[in-house]
Image (cartoon, rainbow, N blue to C red):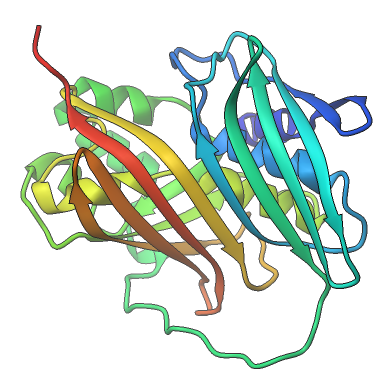
Length: 286
């Protein structure tokens, strides 16, 4: 409950002036701001300048690591207001420099053609061990980086379809599936659910580029950082109900990995799609 309440406070930006907002970061031991936080806060800032249309896509670039000890200023540029579509650009600024830039598009509801890719055959969340069960079973054998990650209270619960990949170090085909949901009920406002999903969509995705190599972003010798992030909303959903985040990595090379994700309701409706490229390189010893 407290982790979700903290997330909602983080997403509730302070208005400073027309088109100008201030966001804060949770005070944890992280040395940089979580990328999903900046995506979610930027979407909040853009959405607060739009009336009557939900977002259908966002595309963002990370330029600098965020400083969790300093506020983030979000400056919104109202690029276009049309009859069907609205376009916004948001710059996230710290210490006088842009750390993230995002374009978001909003579209009024319309009828049209409809199809979707089917949800893959994956165990349901109630068929997988809970995070608490995994903690009790695996915590004593976890590497320190993974243990510290799982020890913290987090606003998003994850249930990995293949949790053993974090422990056995075996290469696998570059796919993974993770069930996600907020750990407590959220308000009914659809915009909150969209911003919470934008926050969660940065979780686990880049790690998919390491599945083929038997490695994870928790390895002490891996340097990993999101470079860009794209998210498309397809249908309404609730982020406090189970959503399947199925992910793949079609390519890695040149110290970068490309990853993609599809997000389904438990009933099989495709509600969002994601793409991301990130930096993945081994740290130089010494």
